Image 1 (tube, helix red, strand yellow):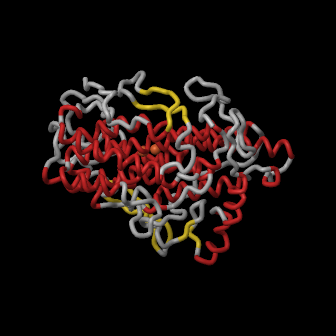
Image 2 (image 1 turned 90 degrees about the vertical axis):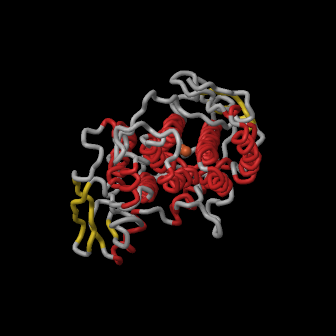
Image 3 (image 1 turned 90 degrees about the horizontal axis):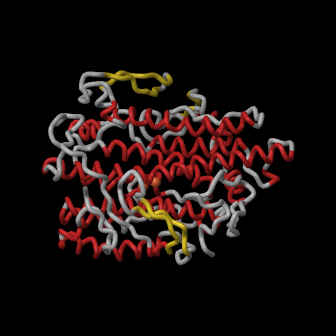
Length: 471
Ligand SMILES: [Fe+2]
Ligand SMILES: [Fe+2]
């Protein structure tokens, strides 16, 4: 059992005190991180006590402590899940050999790249969401936003620890660069495109936590399979925190749906905009946007990089060990979509080539679960509309669909049709302006903004009208 040192300057269960050089290096990075947090983290309420969850252990029970804390004083720590005794590599060319406790020289730069790309998304999302505190629909939501933010900060710590501990000088430079790139910075942007857009309103935030944090879940889940054991254990623990982020998205969108149907019934109309609500067609357009942008994050349908990472044992599939195949994937094949001027077709490739598409498929299936719940709310209220996931080819910028137009129901359309219909499929400036107009900060305990229903229950057994943020 790894021992938790909770009172250390950097709380950890990796025996930082036993490695003075590493400890000193991370303690030098710490004030830079806090400075970044104060400058580019939440733009308001930094010095208000927030009811936050803090990781203090990694066991199944009692791994987190809840209490009011001012965010810059949050105890960001380094926690790896418990090691699995005699863990073996589950896939790729080294399948069956012992997992690595150190980085093999030949995979050093690939592994570093994987850590940097993953690590970069964590502070990026904090930066994207930094102004949302001004317009939170309730104190409950404000607290959830900050919870997500501090944990994304901790995920950065998780990657920075691995960089410092296992990658020497280069790793330290990469850790510094994490605080130098900024979301939307024209000169030094974040690595992935989707992380350079501001999250402009709370509907976008709920959609982002539902769809884009879920991409994160799938990336972390495939890194959890890694032959590099410290990375595997790191991601395992991050996934625990990540679940709450997707809960915020799923329940957030669900509460918007619930409020919309309530307003529809109350005013006997489909158009709830005059009554301070968000129409179902606008919800669908936001969903279309965030889903399609998130699909792009998985990359092209076939990928040599992904194949190499898999063969090397660096990155597996979602739930690799539960799969019933040879875990090498060099001879088994699958179909992947292929778009040409003739339309949407398919081609057969080895599963090894198609790993991005396989992960995207798993993700898509996971995404349907929330929709089923939201649609149940609609059905229960006799509303004859369903929210749907658009076709995988809709609004894509990456992979085979790039450069083509596909309607949400999966029909190839020409440029003129796209131009004429896009306002029905994606949020327009007017839609965004309406949503923005509803965004007013509500800071009275228990009160909700008019466009969203209250949550079913509070956090950690507290009532909905609890003082989640002391203002
Ligand atoms: Fe994260
Ligand atoms: Fe997250």
